[in-house]
Each structure stands twice: as structure tokens, then as C-alpha cells.
Length: 382
Image 1 (cartoon, rainbow, N blue to C red):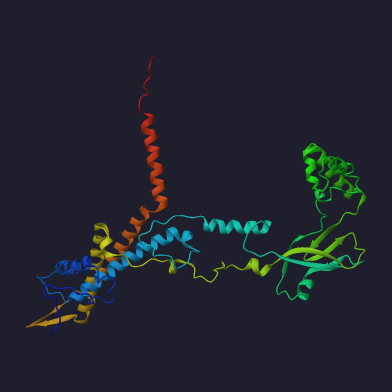
Image 2: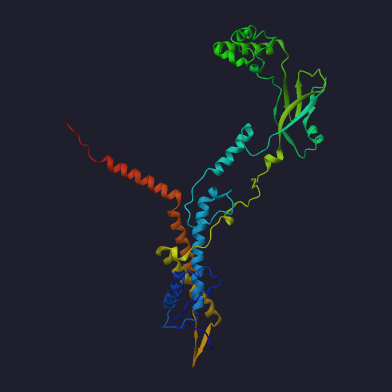
């Protein structure tokens, strides 16, 4: 039976790995042959034959580096996804970037509160008007939307029923305000200017009293216009007595507010962990801690491959007998080692999380304060 075995040496060349992620990296090229020798000897060579070739070891090493990168960057994504979401996918790869936390997700949330208050948000406020009819007090705003070709339900946000501000009607003959002021302004040659000029001539409380007089006049002598809006059924107070008077209002489309998607403005945005721009790591930039893990994981992969190869040849005949190969032991050991290595790596990343590091710094600061509290305080006598 002619089973290919490890010949004892190898010579890596670009293209020897399945994906070629790291083949152009001189450090990976050098370590590939070193790892192949290391793995073969760990598997028993030269005391026993190892039924693997150099490309099998190269494949295991490439797989281990990629797994290390995936675990590392998956952890980075989980730590910083809120800072990434909403950014364009065209930003440069994040591998060697210090991720700066931002307030984008918090601002997006606060915008929606501002939207309800009418001071911000991402929902468009639209304007409309309805013609009031003499003698008609109630108006169906849902029917108004249908008549104007609006799809879906609307929500009225503001109705402009108030009178103009009193300062705009400062010279109100019905309230008796502003009288006598024009003569004073004319005396100084300012009669053609805005009434605001009188602020230079009169104290501010004078203007406040005049404005208040106008507002009291509206409240006592004039009809008080108001409305009631329930389920988009508008009721006007008092009942209109004049035809063809337009009542203006602002409204939004509920479909706009219920839309959960951020307007990308034609850009492709980062939406989840799958499109955060991380790439495979640069092998030569991985430190000795990372490479040590990679070699151990690649060895476990090599052990697993050897187990599957030996499973094809469960027994090997020899003169007068046969040998049973250790397929089961290899696969069991390899599976256990891979699981243990992944758990160890994730536990290590947990110790470097933002939360853990801040907790450690806080504990360190507290310990320093406790130590300083025990230091005797020197009293100086002058």
C-alpha cells in the first residue's frame, strides 16, 4: 500500500495554500516551512511515519491564521458595532484603526424625540389647508387626505388657529394702543421708521403693558378661536360664519414615522456585523502571543487531518500480522484541543474588553487611594 508520507523537509512557494491570503507575506513564507517541521515532529516524526504532505501543513497554518483573525475582529465588531452602524461601507478597512466611539446611535435616538416635539428628527413636516364653511363645525381630516391623494394615515401636528403675535399689531385702534406714539416719533424725524424705534424713548415695561392690553382686548372683546382634534376629526370653535376661509395646519405621514430604515442617500451603509470593513490580518504584524496560539491551533488541525487520513486505512498489513491505526484518538484529541484553544482565546479577549479594562483601572485607582490613606501625614510646625 503506497501511502504518501512526510518526506522530512519542505519548501514553501506562493500558491501552496488553498486561498493564498498570506502567501505574499515573507514572514508567512518563512514560518510555513518551520511550522511544517514543528508539526511533523509533534506528530511523531521521525519515530513514526506521518501521512501528511507539506501542503497539508500549509493549509492548516493558513486556516489557523484566518481563524485567529476572525475571532479577533468578531470581538472588535461586537465591541464597536454601535459606532460603526450608519457609516458608509466604503470607509477604509478597520484592521489597524483605533475605533473612536461616537454618539451617532444616541443622536439618532434623540432625533426621534425631537421629531415628536417638532424640533428635529428625520420625518418631514408637511403643510396643508382646509377650507372652512359657514355653519360647519366638524371636518374629517382623513377624508381631506383621501381627497388630496395622500396614501396612508396622516397625523396632524399643529393647527394655525392663533392670532398673530401682539407685537405685530402694536398699533391696534380697537385696543387703543399705540396712540400718541406717532406724534412723538415724528417730533424726532423718525415717523417713517419701525415702531421698534420707540424702544429708545420709552421703558420696556411700557411696551409690555401695551402688548398685554392687545392680548386682553382679544380675549375679552373678540371671539376666542380654538379647536378640538380627536382621531383626525377636527372641530372648530366657534362655528365659522364666513365662507372660503382657509385653516392651515402641519401634518406628517405615519408611514414616514413608522419607517425603520435610515435614509442612506444612495450610499451603502454598515448595517450589521457582516459588512463591517475588517479584512484578514497581516501575518507579519501578529505578535508572538498571537503566533503561539496560531501554531497550536494549526497543530490541532494537522492532528485532525492525520486522523481522517488514517481513518481511510484503519489497519495496515505487515508480515504475519496487521497494525491498527489511531484514527479515533487523533480526532478526539484534535477536537478537544481546538475547542479549548477557541475558549482560551475568547477568554483572553474578554480580559481586554473596554468594560473590563475600565473596571481594572477603577480598582487600581481605588487601591492607590487606600495605600495613600495609610501614609502618615507630616505636620510642619513653623
